[in-house]
Image (cartoon, rainbow over all chains, first blue to last red):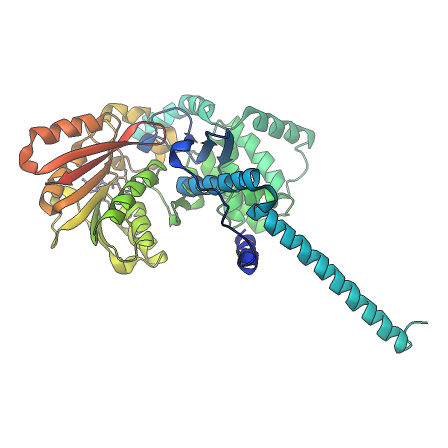
Length: 135
Length: 329
Ligand SMILES: C[S@@+](CC[C@H](N)C(=O)[O-])C[C@H]1O[C@@H](n2cnc3c(N)ncnc32)[C@H](O)[C@@H]1O
């Protein structure tokens, strides 16, 4: 888990300078409805419950985000907000959203890597033929 | 005596509680369907086998949150604090040692030990805290109390805070962790709570800025005054104590919850401490029972000699007024 988080951060940092964040929408508190699914009952000290599901609704678009990934309420609230920003960014900015830009960059990178791999392979084959390793 | 009585109530309580679980019925049904199609006779080997097997066993035994329980046990075995890891690694084969540990933990859960004690830790805001019985397990509502204090601290100059009733240390440590210039004094009357607070502080490398005192808050003696006092004191009304969840009654220190007849026994002591030790314009933030904000407001209006003014109450995430903000005049 930890390593995958690290990996994400790493790619993020590497391509950050090429991504344009200027269009990313900002959340307005009055446009959000936040709910916490914690069942009925008195809550507080009288309840011990492990799931901390946060449901975040963006009123203007009706987009609903559900997050219960973490054991901490605060982390789920923050994560729900960041997921909502990504969704809104994709909706509003389409191919200019940060996610779309990153994907494009990623695709470019894989094509580039594939091209290099093929080139290396060709050179290798050439060398092998030259050294008479292949009949 | 009380606990034997409690144990007898467990069965009925659990029936009621398991209904409260917010796990979707579809998820529940698909899991049990799978459990029966895989036969159940073959020896469990993978993460998924154990998930299915113990989901069924916990459900049959009417353990509260059966799926969450086994998922958290498995996540902790996989050294993760996220349940998603369990699903990502569902095909992983478990070693004999891992199996033994899982079964040991599951047995504890069958006895209604809270899952946070079973795995020995839980998350509170950005932190992972060590937890063990009978020290009170931090509740998510209290993360909101911390948020209220954070917003206040950011708006003025706060260098030193006091936390009566610190339990595992959750509140003080969450604030110290976010505010590198802050110092805190924490107090609890339970020695086990104080030890755990110190342990958590040192694990999180925050002990340099935290002083822990073991005493009842009414007896505390301090050298200096504070800019902010924050506390989640025992506030459950005595009449509500028998309605607590079985796993709370069986495992948590009941003195961490019992606030006396009107639930305000310890709150009254804290108000006295705030009068003596809060700097002028300093603030007191408390988590309380929904019946308390009004009582506290009246109490303060009726006792001007305390020099405390009721500023406002704040709601929790279910819209219930559960936090009070008080200012020293
Ligand atoms: C509800 S727990 C809160 C623990 C922690 N602050 C949290 O939010 O997780 C209340 C704590 O107050 C302690 N306590 C109860 N009565 C007290 C008193 N008179 N003086 C000091 N601490 C007390 C209990 O030992 C328990 O640890």
